Length: 176
Image: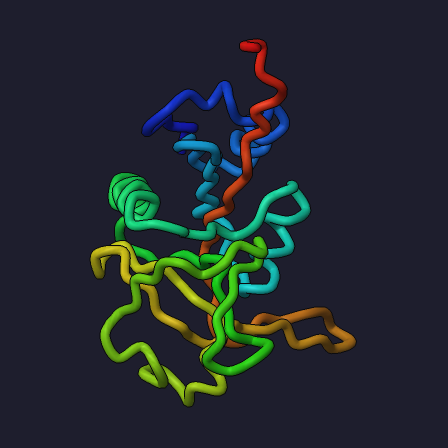
């Protein structure tokens, strides 16, 4: 898959991010003050997904408005419509109190009806996916984890592709 421009100008995205998206065979797009990278070939646990995004100076996507939700949903419908992706919302610290890994306040949600304990017990559903084929609604599901042994790590539970969000540095204004 090649990099595809959906909306905006990816020239506003850092050059190292553009190169990373090419290496990932991901899809990069820009909207408002953020760049978004879909990494469809990475099937990882939620923690691994957040670590991957943060190692590149971003976070799993954090959706703060219906406008951004619509952008993300259209992006996903166009490029990865049949699979859920991890987003940066979790209640791992305190059951039922969700927060974004980016530190942004939770101002907007798009929960699937009956999301509480629809997959496992609510105490095991701590990480959130966006589901494009369900109108971009969100569901909290088990985070997945890595089991370590003398033979190496193995994945258990949920693994999904990731959608990272990176802020665009606007720099100083030349208009005085």
